[in-house]
Every structure is written in structure tokens, then in C-alpha cells.
Length: 238
Image 1: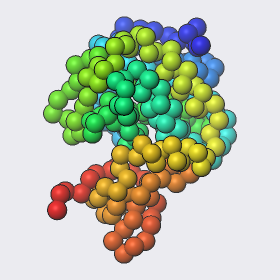
Image 2: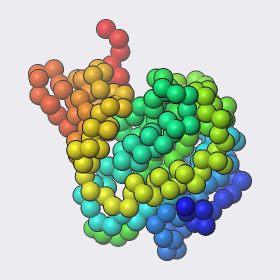
Image 3: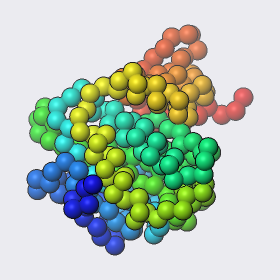
Image 4: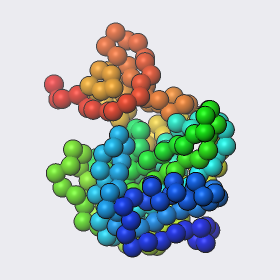
């Protein structure tokens, strides 16, 4: 376990920022920052992340070396975390994955993953992978996507009890950064929340899985399969 590499704090502005500072000072792969509360937690594309007591808010310093699959780290991490979290939920409860970085239970968001890389020229210096999981905290209301918690689905664990397992899972998933393997693509497909849903963004069409490089595949109206990145929005009901 990586307990000796976990830096714990009652409150920080952002575990991501703290982990980047650790990485810059030479912290090794698997070093982590965990806080009970974040004042300025963030998600993808600058969105704020509400981080109340009772949830798990952490960031892990990852040094995967050079590889063509850096963009796939959050997806690979999601696969590993989904499998792990199902072990603490009520039997039969599935954790789905919503591209590019959300953990979903019963059509509501239970967690998210944020991978931020730092480069020196063309060379990768490090990646910080942040994980936010609603464990037993009060979930936010009025969000653009419904939220839920592990506790609402039978989990009797605390954020503290999950910390080391989650840090270890992230560290293992990010030791290297090759493109997603055939087995990983299949594991994602079986949990793919977007599969078959109509999208308005990043392209109008139907979600159709992901590429080994971690990009979303969209079947557009003319029958062409295209690869896309960017923000996902579901098309309004017809």
C-alpha cells in the first residue's frame, strides 16, 4: 500500500494544485494529496467541484513516462475504480463510465476523474490524476447532471477507509501510458453510459464507443463514424 506517500489535510484550496507542487519538488509516482474539504475543487474545463465533508477528494502524482496513451489515463483509471467501487456497493449495483471522466450509478454522477499533464517542451514531466467521489457526503442539488453517493447505494464505508485503496488503484492504472488495449476497450464498452445515446455535442450523432487513444466515436447522420473530443451534451428528446 502507498500510505506513507499520502499527504493528508483537513482543508486545501485544491488537491490538484497541491499535488502539482509536490510533483514539481520531485515527489515520486503514487504520491497523493487528500483533503476532507476543498475550497476551490475543480473538474474538467474549469468547472467547479463541490467538495463537502464525507466525500473523497484526492489527487495522485503520476509519472508514466513517455507514451502515446496519455489522453487515456483518465479512462483507464475509471475502469479500475469502477471495478473496485462495485466491491463496496449493494450486490448487483453497477458503476458505469461516462466519457471522458465520470463515474455513474443509476444515471447519476457519483464521481469524476481529472488528469492534468505538465510538459517540458515535448517531454512529459508528470501527470496529476484527481479523483472526487461522493461517499457519505451530502450530494449537491441543482447540478447540470444529477448526483448521487456511494452511501445511497448500500456502501457502508467512509472516505477515510477508501483512501489508500483508491490511491493504489490510480497509481497502478497510471504506471505506464500505452493506448487502451482490446481488453480495456471491452471493459469500457460494458460500462459505457453514452453508448447509443443521441448527442448534440461534440458532434451531432449517436455515441459509439471510444478509440484506443481515448477519443469518443460518434456515428453522424450520414453514416460516417468520426472521432471527437470536447464537451459532451445529450441531444434533447425528440
